[in-house]
Each structure stands twice: as C-alpha cells, then as structure tokens.
Length: 138
Image (cartoon, rainbow, N blue to C red):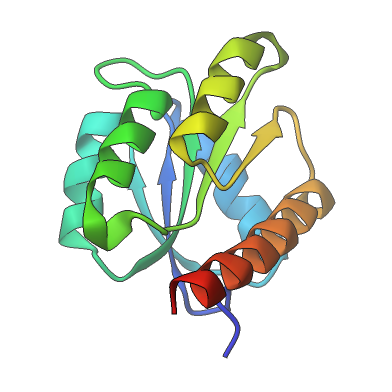
C-alpha cells in the first residue's frame, strides 16, 4: 500500500480557520477525507500525540503560541514522529525560515496561494522521498 492513501489521517495546522478549510477542500479534491485540525503548534502537538496514527502533517509556518518551525522541531525530536511526512505552508517572504525548516527535516514546503495540482505534486515528491528514507532505515 502506498504511504499516502485515501483513508490516511492528515493533521492540518493553521491559525486561520479559513485556511484550514481551503487545505481540506484541496485535499478532498485529491481524494482524501480523514482530517484532524489544530490552530497552532502547541495544540497541534497535543493533537498529534492523541492521533499517533497520523500519516501527514500540513502546517502553516507563521502561527501564534508555537510557530510551524517550532512545531516541526518538536515533532522531529520525538522518535515516533522522526520520519512523519511534514509539509510546511509558507508565504514568499519566509525564505530564511524555509532554509531552517529543511535543516530541521521538513519533508517539503509549499508557498501560498497554491492549487490542488501544486499540492498533489508536493505530496508525490514527499512520498517518493519518504520511500527512499525508509529503505535506508530498514
């Protein structure tokens, strides 16, 4: 079975409900429909621990209480989430943070605004990269 399948659980993290709804709508267009949500990195971390079967995190970078970058650091520090695919949603102006995110181990970044096709392409790259990483670990 592929890593990304229609029933997989996706954690969507953004401080704006409208943006979470947009991401869900785009993911539904791609055939996914199992979501959990959080409005910042702190609540996202608690949600992730409560839903350890999460297969993918899609998180905004700029959020109050705990940024997407800090959430990524926290996720990567946990052994069980070390390889969890993590897509960071950014704005064009956050290039320095994007570089930091790749050093920490983000799986991919996507710049707002984006389409379902952009999202699909990113997910395909993440899935291919994940397959390579897990082969090296095995």
